Image (cartoon, rainbow, N blue to C red; front, side):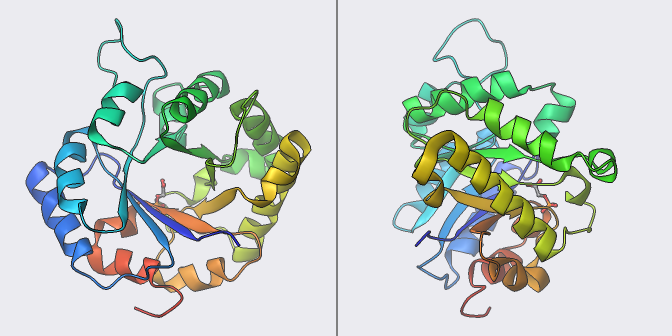
Length: 249
Ligand code: PGA
C-alpha cells in the first residue's frame, strides 16, 4: 500500500507574515492522519515554518536546491543548508525551473542524487508541453525525462515523482483523470524497466489545476498516489479539503 501524499507548492508567494499565517491556519485544521502532507515554501520561510510545524505531522519541503554542498554558486542554496533547517522534501525539476531557469534532465539528475545523498526526499517533476501532446509525443518526452532524471540512482524508494502536464499548470485545465492515470501508469512501467519491482513502491503524484472539486476523482484512480498543488495550496480551507479527500472536508 502506498501512502497518499498531498504536497502544496507555494511557488514565489507569501511574505514571512503571510506565510506564517497560512501555515498556522493549515495546522489548526483537522487533517486526515493517513495522508502524508507537505508544504513546499519559499527559502525565506523555511526556518520559521519549520518552527510552526513542530508537533504536527505536516512535513516541510523546499522548491529547489543546488547539487553541491557549498562553493561559488551565487544565489543558490545547498543541501547542507536545507539539512540545517530540517527540510524533509525538495521539489526538483519543476517545469517552471526547466522553462525559465533552463534546468535540464542532466542537472535535474544531479539534484535528485544529491538530495538522496543528503536524506532529503526529492519530488521529481516531469511533464510535456501542449505542443508535444498535440504531436502525440507525450510518452516519448516523459520517458526521456524519467530515464535521464533517474539515471544511476542507487535507491529509488524515497523518490516521489510528480506528473505535471505543462498545459494543465495554473491554467484551470486539468488532464482528465483517465489521461493522468494512463501517463502515471506509463511512468511506473518506465521506472519498472529501469529499477524492477521498486517501482511498485514509488509514489507518483498528479499536478496541474488540482482543486477540491477534482481531487477525489483523481485519487480514485489505480496509479495516482497524490497531488502536487499550486494555486489551491495557498488557501488553508482548500488545502484541507484536498488532504481530506477520503473523509470529506
Ligand atoms: P497549479 O500548479 O495547481 O496551480 O496548477 C501545480 C504546480 O505547478 O505544481
